[in-house]
Length: 492
Image 1 (cartoon, rainbow, N blue to C red):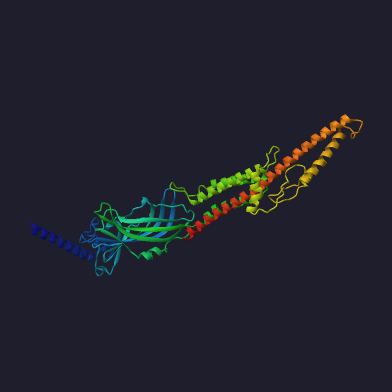
Image 2 (cartoon, rainbow, N blue to C red; image 1 turned 90 degrees about the vertical axis):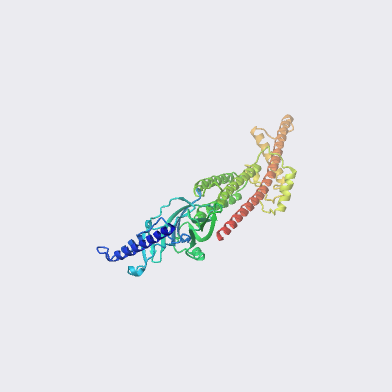
């Protein structure tokens, strides 16, 4: 029985081969409209008895080697929020089909033919990172050569999941992988190899459209086999598409306006600290920066796993503007003239007016008494002095007090239609002396308040210079750090 079964199978195989040869001869000698159509005869010859659902090998122990190749044509979209990369690639794969072999001499020297993809066996090689069906054009044909090599070339719009790191935005470099593997067949059935050398594949940018936001650096390839259950192993080929963002657009529209606003904030420190214009100027800058952040909020990439460094930069710049405004408010409050202002403490006077100018080399002179009173005649007698010395001489203050007392005394007497006191009216003289004494006490109290205000003004100017230097150092250090980081990332 076993011998008869083998004999029956052999007879069936011989009959199949004979029928195929007879069919080829019959097609070769056919008449009608396909009498001279060599490609038609060849297509019918290849389709006779072909089973597209069976892996095309005569020995089932022989694995089918599938050669693949990848060329990136364009980067269509990088969605940082959803962590999705959309690319347009040219994908090529080829394999040996042992059932699609013919002698070119029998078919007028034809060595290759295109036949429908639906009529041949195609390996089930997919991309693991697929998350959506792209709008890829349908290529319904494959090329087959006379030695049985099938070439399946097609463009694919690939929508894949990718871990996008936007911390370095807009100087970021992304590395997204495309993993090709057979979904069902193990490495004993289908093995994957590269069609070209890895070095040639990595440097190939011949078809890449280099006019968009992203620049293709290289495409790295790596082969490995893996197992899920430690029993069956699968072959995979992973392509790492490395792209880099072009930062010019974001530098011009995001970084430069922010830098200009910060420079204007630094320039605002040269406004007089005892005036209200500096506060208004700082508030205007803060409002302008808030509007700027609202405008650029849609431009910055948003993810749930992290914040780009440029977002941190904007937040820190906003914090610096708030600190600058707070410092300005404190200094203006400190130097503002008030009649009930307490005297400057001795420890503060020692630290700010004596030690700080020496330690921090504050030698610039300021006019400290220009806004202490609304009477211009009193202000003309003040002189410029360095920090750490008394701004106005007490001698000038006393002279002003004496002149003003005499002027007010004479004016009061004339207003009452009285003549200067004489010896025959002693009660009136007593009243006049009491009024003069009252006026003198008032002037002395006012001069004392002015001296206190001048000391606070000195303290305010010194603290303003110190805080300005600290603020300037912080801004410069922060800018140098960010500039260095971004330069390193750009050069990488």
